[in-house]
Image (cartoon, rainbow, N blue to C red; front, side):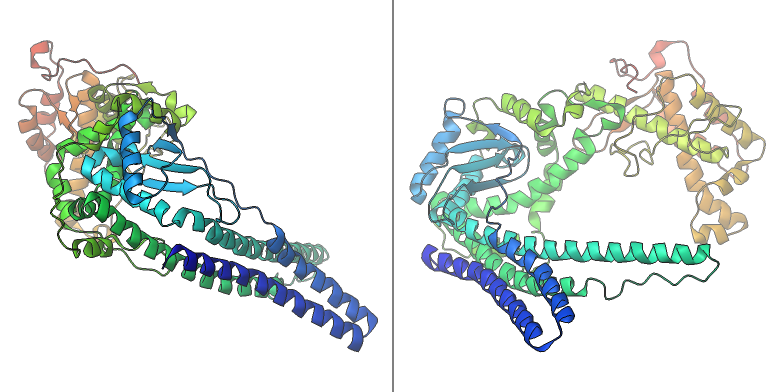
Length: 591
């Protein structure tokens, strides 16, 4: 379907909204006329008032012509003098598509590329064109794949998709506004009625009478009925316009295959979901790892560190590339499923242009590191920009040390029967937030409050060491299985008795004791968290301890506990030669 038929359809759908409003206004006017002619004056007056109240949201929806302004996405505008190669590439692709190049290019911090246009006169006249390119997307794409993505976006310009979007967007806005007006009035009426009934009930109770239950059933039903009419038309409108959006995506894919080649386009479509998933993992497990400790990676590395992850995790990414994501299909989707788009492109005849993934698309930038740092300034909040910056190895060690300490304190508080965060034991146990459940996980705990500040310094006043000592003393005194009863248990574990109960409790006891031991090693400066881009961070222990520690932990939680091996491992040594081989000292307090 060409631009003219699509424009005509969009205008008809938009006109349908106004026709619905006129029909409802005519129906209200007819009700007013019938009431004036056939009913007594007081009843007719009530009908007039109801009609006027119902007509107001309809009129507001019809004549509030302004659509929401363009949302300025965080990013950095780059001109041709700053990024000549990128601009030249975009201009060349636009020329091949046969359309006008964008007026602005913005580098953003998301895995996306998109175009927009400030069209006028309901899309009949063009306006300022903007192209947004996410640096994380460029990080994962080759130059040929990025050319396919850019050709896809220029295809939207060439097919007038951005201009016609103004008509469809106006219709969506008008329908949603009108529904919101009716729902708002219905909600206000229900609240008013509820307050009236509650006041009446309170007065009845004060006089010793039984109060009636608050019942707002039927209140605001007229408003909701009108809202349902507009909601039904809104669903029809969305289904009709979004089906056109999906067809526009297919057409833009064909334009990309024509300009950049079939294989490059297919490769780009396959790569985008992989980059998106990898970037989410990177943000959660690396870039924001130190937020709880008030830390961030060096300037430019919050976004730029994604390059290290992609370079190190080839096998995992290849596994993701092998399977296209399966997405539930909905008539309200703006984009077709990736699998269907890939299938259509790969069904095209071979054009003889193989995808060439040799050069990364970041090579189109004059200075990628500078671009990462500049975009980072717009993406992060002022509070985040004020956090302390550390290089990646120091960041991982400091952040994981804080998380280990907090996790150890939480377990210690449970084991010793104190509330987390309360200093109620003779050993001064402090509670803390959650941390990874074992020493080899580099990810922040999902239960940790990412907006809080750490309450414990891993090199603090010795409260953690006292907690570990108290726990070992309690184990030596025969209290191991009483301690196990204080820990969270499944229903099956709670119902178990004797040896079965001990077998359920043993892994949790061993894991919690391991957390306390890890925290003690870190407190003594004899262990260090090691950064790895290929796998989870690992805690490096003193020479030989990694082999001896599992057996010592097993002995401490055995049926006949023996804490001697564990105490021997934790005994501080005077000679620095027995410390962990890492030569870089751990950072100072981060809390």
